[in-house]
Image (cartoon, rainbow, N blue to C red; front, side):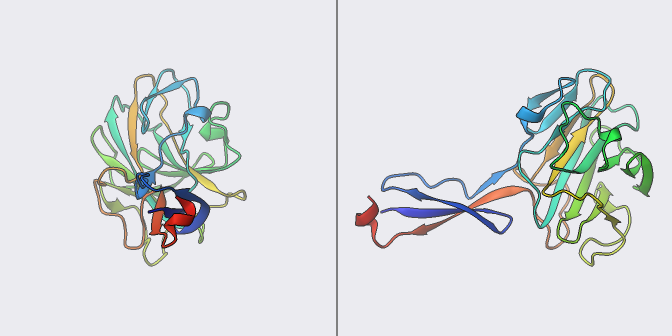
Length: 224
């Protein structure tokens, strides 16, 4: 028996592959990780989804998959967080985090205590995140809106209703998730959905993944 497998990214159809008789169907979902080919020398990846700062720098990392539709991803402060220079959020496809600091790029990112844009403070989250706490970034790519939450409490507005968020003025799409710390030794883990989220995503929002939907082929003799 053969199978057709179409790759979908949050509902968008990608290229088709054919699985022959005896092939093992791929995992239904392949979640994003951090792109090791676009990584600053000032950070390391202890795991594919963990950033550790090796030097005092605002250089960092981006996701290996583009964001599409309504997405939700979480950052957990795992160790060494001592200051407000913890950054994560959304950048467009022009950012090369190996050479461009996030503070110098027109990007959204959630920092300790709030969401910032282009160096200006915008949205306050409740309290100051500490090691073990989780910041979530909630993005409606079609509406170009972003929200932030700390331990499940949205800073402002309602992502489901599409209100109270902050508009994303980035001109170039697709968007990617971004992350960096500042001081040496700081470490953050990002979860795109490969493991259960700490807090529940808003209704209609999901992680960042490629979905492989497989269909049986009635004419297996033709392809096997």
